[in-house]
Amino acid sequence: MVAVHKITEDFYEDSFILIALHSSLPDYALTYAVNSSLKVAFKRSKKDLDLSNIISFPFFEWEDEINDRYWTLIANSSKNKENIITADLFKDEVTFTRHYLVPEHKEIDYFLKIEEEDAHMVGDILKALTTIPKILTAYKIDAENLKSKNNLIF
Image 1 (cartoon, rainbow, N blue to C red):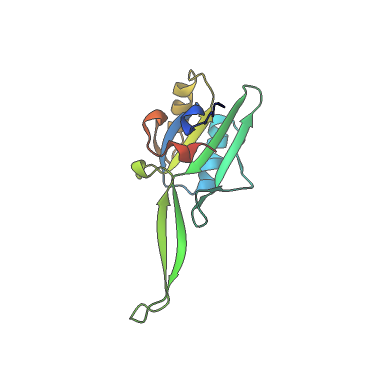
Image 2 (tube, one colour):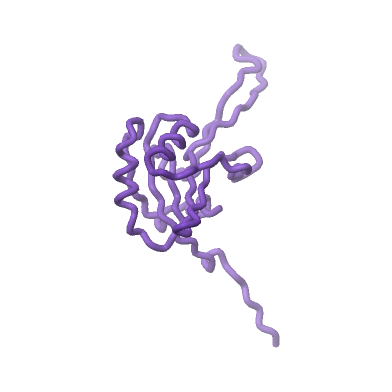
């Protein structure tokens, strides 16, 4: 008899630090501010994070080769433009649908994800982020308790 081994999704565990950012800045302006404040070098990724054929999230990334860390800055929401064809007063009206990367935290504007095992520098990062004038608040989120944690693994 031959044994069959199956690998489940629980087998792959990606450890990362997740920081929530509340800001009204557009993603490119926030990235510039974070780059200046934290002395990092985020650049727009060539590929977007696609959750489906109509839902995608552009993101910024930086690989810290000195400390062996991979950083990602991504918006929590994405708007899709849709044309609804109707025969009433709002004929051929364009509508927008908003989708969330982490739907259980719709109030969060951006996520800063740092892939690493050691969480000793989170306090310094949070302190630097809160000094940026257009960031209202920044705080760490426990990613283990998120229902949509798989959306953050890319």
